Length: 196
Image (cartoon, helix red, strand yellow):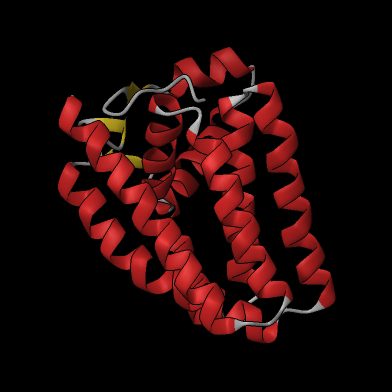
């Protein structure tokens, strides 16, 4: 996945030099990553990669287990054919990527699947709230994939079931299946945390 580790300090000048760009785009990127919850900017201490605590993940789960099933519910009710195709494409990408064992690509395809469902709700407030969770959620998903790479196969099966419920416009099934998916991921993540 990424080269930067949680808690690592970033130095603008060094990044600009490595990427051979001016510091302006680096500053803009830092601002955007801070907004996404991936970086912490502290004037005198500089910029560090966020290091979420177990409590952060528990709070994230509390939000996701309620909001993402709601997104699946409204996605099933409101999705357009075009949005359905976007969800289908991300699901197909996951299947292809699982064969190559690329963690970064698997993570990105997983994010795309969930975000396509969220966008299909047509609810700008739900989209905004779930987008705000993206940063910590990224660490969470990455930890699961790194520790349990074979979990992707299980996740794909769960995603296929969620997708079929959305295709069938069975909002209650989509909601129930998404909730079970989020709960399954969280249980796996807490097992991982108990080992470290």
